[in-house]
Length: 251
Image (tube, rainbow, N blue to C red; front, top):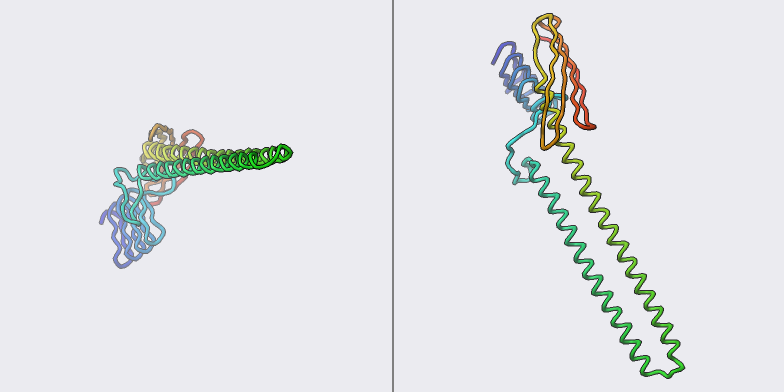
């Protein structure tokens, strides 16, 4: 349905100008959208779905993000950023709780051990003669050294746990910023696109913002003939960048 649209195989649907459905049961909706894979779906202008049983909302260099997505419930539902953040927070809470429990258990065990050693030392001191006191003092010193070593090992383990938690928090924060940058770059690239007249050039620029991150994009397009165009574009946000080239033929 639409000028130059075509659905080649059984069950295929093509809606929009220049839209192509070349896969079995494939659906393409939107100008120049292409659904090539088996039972694939291409939604939106320029979207391309090449793999079987997939849904594509864009193409490499011109991706789209899904907004207003409800939190998933079933195992096969999509997950939104809010759920991802909550999962990370739950993981951190569980790790902190585990660390606290281990610290309390270690402290109780250390106190029990110290009380036992002190009680045994006192009983032995009352039962033995002055000649045996020096020997008991040596045993007490050995017990104290063991306790000091035990505490040192416990402190090392706590330090390792804290280090791992800090690294996990840093990784989650970096991932969150990168997702926001990718979204900003996609928005900026989309805003820079345009279609010139035959024989004309088009130079466009766009800005994008997402969750505190911003991006700039620029694109150049040349329409050589009525049926052939070529374009190149780039987008950057912080230390993230995207470069894309493309060409189009209509007939």
